[in-house]
Image (cartoon, helix red, strand yellow):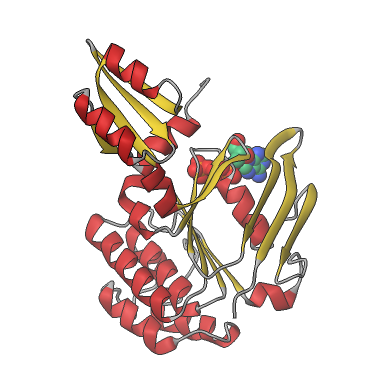
Length: 290
Ligand SMILES: Nc1ncnc2c1ncn2[C@@H]1O[C@H](COP(=O)(O)OP(=O)(O)OP(=O)(O)O)[C@@H](O)[C@H]1O
């Protein structure tokens, strides 16, 4: 079952500070959505509204057609995994998993135990004595094993070392292919995680600046590099995203599919045509006046 998420002209202000400005989007397929944004862009604010942790100032949000705030039925179907503070948590992994299994109807305890083994988490040690990375691994275990129709990971990898993050990413892809649901991953680690995303949403200063299918985003963007005057002429009528100049060599990021003729002309003129990365695009779309 896929619950769709509809967000319409959502605003959130803290005092007079506008943290979210007219945010609208729709998630209606069981996919992995990458939510990208720089520090303070509003990712956690947005995700905490989706998870009913707080209410918006104005605008509408529905999950499966229902308003999620203080809605016990919808809250059952949404898991929000964030960097929880476990400093007072004297329960161990075993007790914690048992507790979660009691209130998450789709929780797969066997799978959770398998993940605990993969992450090599001690079963009997109190969680407050775990390292930051171990606590994150436990959070991820709970998030994956809950199998909630809407699962949100808000920078869930914090403190994990590279091999541990790799286990997280592999398990995420494997479990998503067996149990498709709406997964939202908020992250700064764009180049490391881009292959996980089916769709990308970029939030900048509280507003959505892009929502696009990852494949088409990457195939529609190119970088054109060569002698400045030749590059300038070639990209003249194209949508230009970013420019870098090094001596007389220029590199321009363009958006819009290049046809065979364009590619032939580029070759004849000695231009190098390369792919763009999501990271390049992210940097470009979120750079600016700071
Ligand atoms: N409780 C709060 N009171 C006042 N301002 C807040 C509060 N929570 C967040 N903000 C502000 O709202 C803006 C968005 O914060 P938010 O935590 O949503 O961003 P983020 O994209 O998750 O950032 P990061 O990537 O650094 O975690 C920031 O300017 C932040 O200072």
